[in-house]
Amino acid sequence: MKNSYDLDLFYTMLISRLDELEEDTDFPVYFYQGLYDGSNKLKHVETTETKKFDDYWIHAIESYYPYIDKIVRNYKSALRVEEEVVIVEKAKKTTSRTVRHLAANTQNLKLPEKGEPMTSVMPKRLLVEYSEDEYGIYENRFVATLIHRLVDFVSRRVQILEEDVNSKKVKELNNTIQFEIEASSYEINIDLKEVETIKDGKVEENNRQLLYRAQELHKKLANALNTEFMKTMRSYKRVRAPIMKTQIILKNTNYRNCFLLWQYLDQYNSLGFELLKDVKQKRFNETYRKHLSQNALFAFSTMMFHDKIKQKDQKLLTKSYKVKKAEELKLTADDLKIDPQAYTIEDTMMNQYYLNKTKQMFKKTIDQYMQTEPKYEVALKKALKDTIEITNSLYASYFEINQDEDVFDRLVQEVNPKEDLESADEKFKIASIVRQLKESDYKKAIALEKKWYNTTLKYQKRFFKSVKLDSDTNLKKEAKRVQEANDAYTKLERAELLDEQKLQVAKDNQMLLDLKSKYRERYKKEAKRIADMQKRKAERELERLRKKREAAKEKLRLSKERQKEKQRIYIEKQKAKIKASHDKAMAALKKGK
Image (cartoon, rainbow, N blue to C red; front, side, top):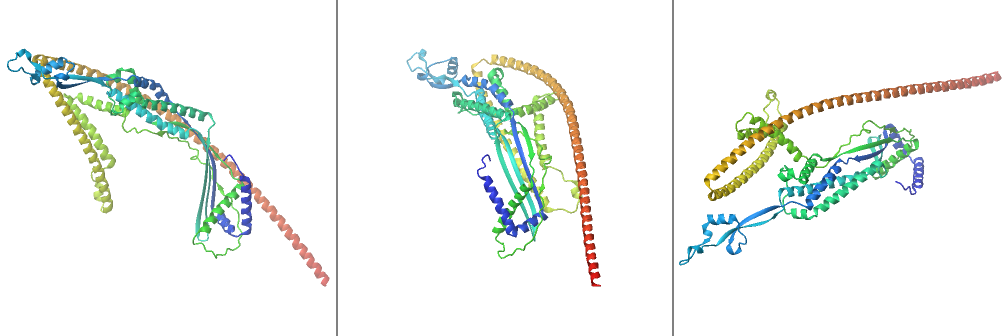
């Protein structure tokens, strides 16, 4: 609160009035007596937190955005050709395909009538081709999906930056009181928290610059959504992982960099930051403690006054009380602990990065079986079976839904039917869920098999049509030559791929050994540093306790000496008083004689 208004006047009048009420009434006596006998803890902490966000992600997107902009301004297209049989009057252009189709389909010819020469044969219908530009190619749909993903990626981070761009100073006051009055126990917990935003500072300026860059990047991406390219791609379906590495994506620089950016987004699913934290504990003077006790008195009296079971005719007796200081809570190591967790934003359950890693493992399994099996189909079946068995074993081991009965359970005579029923019912539900998921996956596999079966039938029909038009002998020779070339190329490619994989495995193993050695050394150094730090901290604590104990001893000694001196003076006074009384009595006795 920057403006104090008339706080000083209001607070002074309030405290003076409370002091008068404590002197004029008896109710505070009972409260303060219970407060003296009970527990009173105070804590006032001021914490300043500053988050310094990293800017690696925005550097990466800004460096790759020009390639996206080039694609949006000059995107590729494919020529889509459709064939249709139309009447001859609508045919505008014919090709060699038209002639072959007409030769194979004589029903499309118009035969001459009687008396007309055979040279007057005319076609009734012709096969014509219509061509148009097709923009919904896989590469364009991939870029459109990437732009949508970038918009969501940047907007989420802009939202987080807007919330935590400035530092925050938090002041917390806690007063916990536990006491008993008569047969009732009471607990008062007062928590007051002030959050102040700090905008001036070097870290805050860096965060604001990062926020400005993120907002500008978000504007660029929002403008990209309104381009002609994105308007054209709205009617096409978005792509999903895994991304197919087509020739355009591999060879074209712009599309290849877009693919690299896609992989970067798969790996970067959080927003990291460095947390700077400053914690201070404020002290309580006697006036502050008194005012807090009066505040607790006011809260307690408010509840008691409005309590429905309050006895209105109850009379309070006058009673004196002692004042006991509230215990001041010290800062602990947990209060000073700084362990910031990066913001996790995107879900990494299934993306290109992890899919590539899984594909590498699956390919390695197939290659291992290829070394022992003569046919590729057998090796593929075994690799798929191993993958499915891994999933089934995961279900069985995690949920324990396929465990054998323990021998120890059969030896124990006492059983609990309710627990057995609950356990069996839970495992039944889990097994049902697993079965439903497998049924869904089985239906997808059936649909995929049906899709490729229909595709095979379609291509078979095309193939049979082409066989009718071409020479059988030449077709067989060409098919045999292509098959031999494909077999030779496949064999050579497989051998090269196997050599590359062996080399890569050796490199990966060496890298893992180096990382293991590096992290082992770092762990030893860190453990040694922590042990030294804890040792120094323990030594400082022991020294502080020793000094505190010596000070307490000295204080106790001085107190005893003062007490002895007071006792001595009191005894001397009593002796003098008794002597004076004795002398007076003797004098009176002498006068009486």
